[in-house]
Length: 94
Image 1: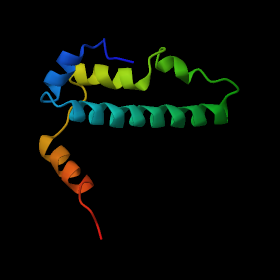
Image 2 (image 1 turned 45 degrees about the horizontal axis):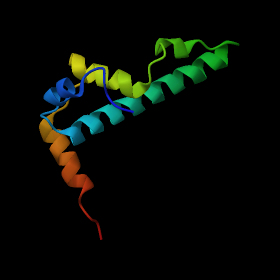
Image 3 (image 1 turned 120 degrees about the vertical axis):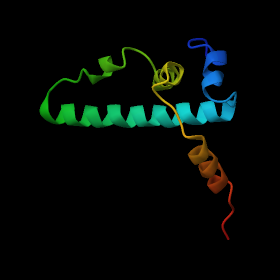
Image 4 (image 1 turned 60 degrees about the vertical axis):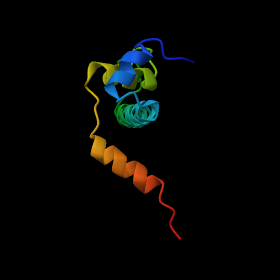
């Protein structure tokens, strides 16, 4: 699978030409979207016999939705917070 829409160059411009940052942002957002959809499924299933929430995504996978949000600027990051998270993830505790 490759990123063709939106184009990878435009996405990298939004994430300081950092492919790791791009992947981290997109995967975190895709997980958030999946959790939101899963929660909606559970609520709808509890009160209805049918479930049409999946049409909300209109056939797109959550990573594609996250990439489009990055391209559009609706998903952003705070560089200092990202840098701190990376430092914390690389700390070995003994």
